[in-house]
Image 1: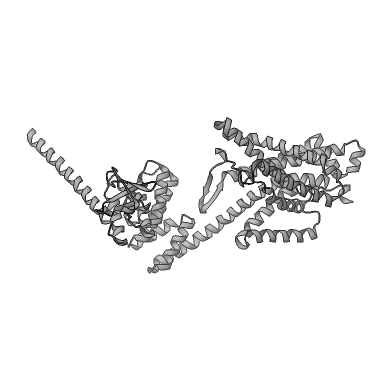
Image 2: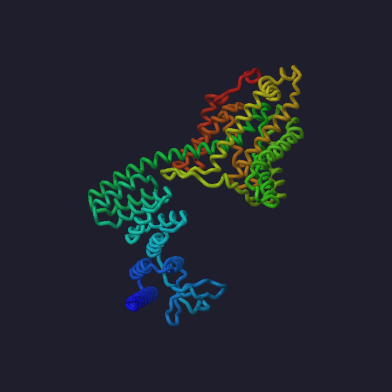
Length: 538
């Protein structure tokens, strides 16, 4: 009896070994057939390779889609290549064993077109749907959605049963519904797929339903797809509007940071400071220098670089501001045209000063880990962390600035000088001292704006030029010297720009906003929130 069991086990082992050998031989023949196959035959071969279950199937298909599958001109042996200079190192597709090297002249590439690539990406997705890595499973589900290969359905269903990550599961459900809609012949299955796809208001589903409607012959399926498409377009329009508001608030927060310092100097002293943008630029370059110091000496603490850059930028830009006021501006009070020309010339000097030190090219300023990434919301709406932090930061800066102006002795003196300079002077307030520190405060806030801008824009000598005109528009529109007006003006202009850009383009949108502001100023010369005081009224 024991002998019989031994013989039976030996036969089973020999049979299994023979099956594996036959499978390997069949797979080798399939790969070899790619040499002379046309597009249709190559797609059939791809399906056979993916269904073989061989451990090297994914590697072979990856090499194929990456145009790294070749064959020797002598012998027609199919190989996977790795380029090394002018020669190619050859590897066996099924064993990964190195087969030597040959010059390119002795090899020929197995051609792959876009149609074959779509099929390969789909089956590759199926092969990695059961991966232990959630990122790979997500990528696989996206690939299956694009390819919509019928062969992926069993694997997708199996993967869905065991999936625990909700984000990946949603992508898999979307991929399964898309595949069944395009490949199933049963009307009930296709209608159910459309119902599932309606829940996913994303551009990819909108495009899929649009293509189905264009070629669909089943009237019931076509009507269901059209209704689903209408619902998805309405949802996308809503989320697109929310996205425009977010982008507008984001742009408004940037304008607020750039303009709030200008509102202080312009409101207190009436100085048209055309070098304000360069003070923003100095803050951005201060951030770059601080980050370089952290990269060199404290790389493990890089996440704290922004916390150090904020006060550093405030001090650097503020010091430049005090120097500008004491060295140039104080001699030009009461002469706005000369002030404009002098500060414009100063802006050119500061730009060249930075070019001489850092060069004319953009500098790399990184985002700390806590500012990297995004929140993905339904409807294709993505809220980036750096933009969210800048919105919060701009409101925080404005709040602290308003508290400083209302709760401190210096703030009281500033407001007194703003309302009536001669009366404030007669009461013993040193207006020259207030002017210098006010200009330094406004310049320091501009430096802080540079820190924020360095996280979303290129740091270059021309950084400030992109924001100076918009900053003046915000200040004039909101009301000269009024911080609440600056807040409302910045957000209003930012949102208006973002809603106009899709229809008019970036440049024309800015022109339209400028025209509206000019017309508005004709009716309200003091802006939305005009300051009150004897000096203003006179």
